[in-house]
Amino acid sequence: MEPVLDLAGVGFGPSNLALAIAVEEHPLPVRARFFERQPRFGWHRGMLLEDATMQVSFLKDLVTLRNPTSSFSFLCYLRDRGRLVDFVNHKNLFPLRREFHDYFEWAAERVAHHVSYGAEVSEVRADEDGFEFTAGEGKVRARNLVLATGLEANLPVGIEPGERIWHNKDLLHRVEGLCNPRHVVVVGAGQSAAEAVAFFHDRFPEVEVHGVFARYGYSPADDSAFANRIFDPAAVDDFYGAPEEVKRRLMGYHANTNYGVVDQDLIEELYRRVYREKVLGRQRLSLHNTSRLVDVNADGKCVIESLADGGRVPVDADVIVYATGYRPANPLRVLGDLAERCERDELGRLRVTRDYRVVTDDSVRGGIYLQGGTEHTHGITSSLLSNTAVRVGEILDSVLRRPVVAAEPVSKLQAVK
Image (cartoon, rainbow, N blue to C red; front, top):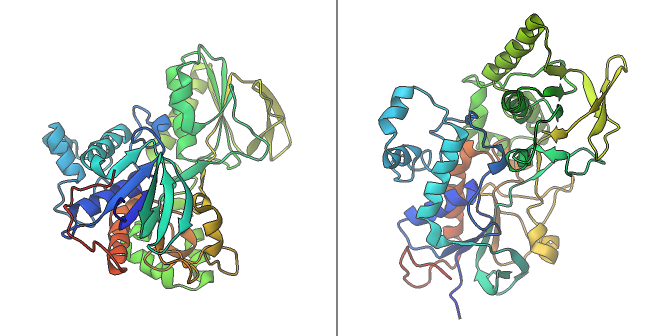
């Protein structure tokens, strides 16, 4: 019989990738395996636009805030790729998104012995050791589960994706099949929406691009030094211990550091384009503020309706892209009936301890940890890269404090197949 894992990771995006690295670097042997339903590592591939940059410093990579000497850092990746000096001369904290994705792939390859790809987890049940579940074709037992099930695309009620209606997560996957569009509509006011507007405007010289949002204009992200402290590891302690009313206020005060906001440079670039086209007398880029999209049909016909005066502009769109964000996937969906043994607060939200462990009833002997889905307890960095390196260190420390871990010697490179 296969040995019991000390931890099993469900999902293998950046969060559990960082955890796999923490396992690899830990001085004590840890039996760990990560299960990913995709055939290979991938992170928002549909939005890896050529010029898109990260909105977080490269120092907030998979490891540096936990272990600044790690060989898995972004700087070590640059050295390995032969670009370290070039990057330093670039004088830039924010790498291209494609470059950071390549960094993730580079790191994922180095811990591939801990990962099973193409393996979807199901039939989870509690047992005397912790948990037993099916992954791919086999049964797996683990003392602890770390759920990193990511985000789900958010679409308005009644909108279904189709041939002409996309969520922006599929942008690059779908655009190759688009031939000389005449009209494209992009719905949303955040970074992804603004990037999609600029992308279509650049890629198709004849297309008319309509940006539609309820705000009066794109709002800049607050990335000032003091506001950015909301992403500090210490801010998690402050948030976790605060009264519920203070938590709500903090999320409201600092939502503009992350949600529905756009980099200032991109805002200014889009404004320049709109103004230039007014001067030249050929308007290809139209930004419809205080507006919404209504009467949307699967064939692309829709109406842009002004929220201010009710004016209506019909559009026969070749493509409608909804850059309307994401919502946390239900982290407990994979648990099936076992989810009923997880405790909830008076608002129906999961009870989660400071070490990211779900509170369960006494019949569950194993630990269930969350990477994501904990904004109500841990704040804005619940699933963000900003605190990933520190968060995985805290989770691993908690796992190692729980009995019984690594009951017999095992090489760090040993993996359960």
